Image 1 (tube, rainbow over the protein chains, first blue to last red):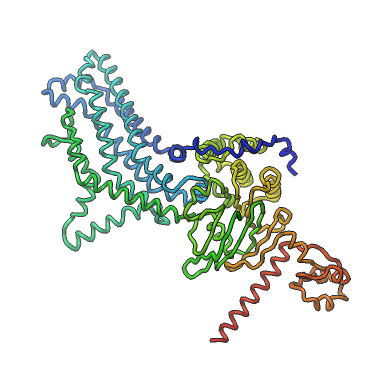
Image 2 (cartoon, rainbow over the protein chains, first blue to last red):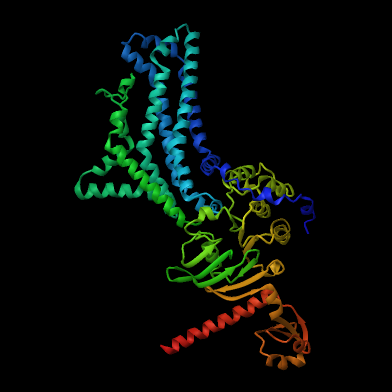
Length: 309
Length: 297
C-alpha cells in the first residue's frame, strides 16, 4: 500500500471546502492557455521581424549614397522613398498575423477534438461561451497587439540602424526622422490595426465555426465552398460579383477607414486622412460584425454538442 | 437528496439505442461500479450525467440538469474520461496554474502534495510523461478538487498493474470520504471488487442488475461441486455453470449456504464471474427473443 500517503497532513475540512469562486478568472486563464498552446501567435511575427531587420541591415550598404540622391528629389517623393521600407515592414507584419490568425482559428476548435483534450477542458467549470470567446480574442485582440508591439520595435531598430549608418557616412540622420514622424505613424498603425481586426472579424468567426464543425480538412471546408460559389457564378452567369465580395471583405477596410485623396499609392501623410467617422458608418463593417457574432454564437452552440473525433 | 437520479433516461444515435429507459438512483457516499460489455451504453450514461450529451427522460445530478448547466455542475463534479485526455502540449506547472485559475474548489497545495510523491517534474510536458505518470497527474489534479461527485470512465485503461493498484489505493485513502460519491466504469472488474459499495450491470442500454456489495455477498454464492454431487447441485437451479480443472463451479442466486456446503466448497464469487453469468443469460434471452419475434412474423 501507499505508506507515504499517511505522512501527508490531512488538511482541515474547512480550508478545503472554501469556495474560491471570486478568485477564479476563467476568461483570463483561457486566453493564457491559448498563448501557451499556440506559440506561433508570437513566434511567427518575431521570425518575420527578424527577417525584416536582417534584410534592412543588408540594405543599409550604400544607404548613404542613396539618401544623398533621394534628397535631391521634391519633398513628397523624398518622404515616399524614405518611408517605404518602414511601410513595407508594417504591411508584411499585418499580412503575417492575418495568416497566423486564420490558421489559428481553423485549428482552435478542431485540435481539442482531435487530441481528445476537449474531455479535459469540459471537465472544468468553464463554459463553452468563455472558451470560444477566449479563442476569438486571439485574432481580434491579441494578434493586433502583438503585431503593433513588434512593428514598433522593428521600426525602432530600423531607425537606429539607418541613423547609425548615415552618421558613419557623414549624412545627417535627421533626414530620416524628419520624414518619418514616428508617433504619428504608430498612431495611424494602431488605428489601421483596429479597423482591420473589425473588418476581418467575420473571416475569423467563419474559421472558428468551421473548425468546430467539420471532422477533418478544416482549411478546405473553409475555402472550397467560397471558391465553388465563385466558379459557379463565373460559369453560369459570366459575372464575378462573389469574387469582388470576397476581395472587398479582405481589403475593403482601406478605402473606408482611410482617405487616400485620390492618389494611386495608398500613402498616409497626415492624420486628416484617417476617417473613423466614415468607417464606423460603413454598412459593410456592421454587416460583417453581425455575421461574426452569428458565426461565433453558432460555434459556441456547436461546441456544446461536440466531443472527441 | 440522491447524488444522481435518472428516470426513463434514453439516448438514440440514429438507429442505435444507446440508453433504453434507464432508471437509476445513486445515493451520496457510494462508490458505484458501472459494468457492461463494450457498446453497452456505459459511456453514454456517464456522458449524460456529465452534461456532455443531450438525452430524453429525466436526469438530475446533485439536483441539477446536467445538459443545461454543465458549467455550474462542473464546480461540484470531477471526471477522468480516460488516461489520454490531458493536453499533450501542456506543462505540469501550466496545468496547475490553469486549473487553479478556473476552478473555485481546486486546492493547489494539495495537488502539489500529491505530485511530490511522484517523480513528475513541474517543467515536464504531458507528452514526455509515461502513461502511468499521466494518470498520476490527472488523479492529483482531480483529488485536489473538492468535488461531490467523481466520475471515472476507464481511468486505468492501458496502465500496468502497479499503477492500477496505486490509483485505487490513493483514491480510497486520500480522497474518498462518506460525503463524496464515485461512479466508475472499468473492464478490470475484479480489481475494484473491494473498492465498490454498489454494483450495476448494464447491457444494450438497460440496467440488468443492480445491488449493493453487501447484497451481492449475501445473495450470490459459488460452489466448486464435487463430481458426485453435480446432479444434486444442478437441481438447485444454478444461474451459471463453468468447468474448472475438470470440476464444475456453479453460481447460485439466493441459495441456502448450508445446503450448498454439503455439495462442495462454497466461496464468494467474483464480480467477473457474476458478470459472465448474467451477460450470458442476457445474450441467450436476446437470441431467443429475436427468433420468437421472427417466428411471430
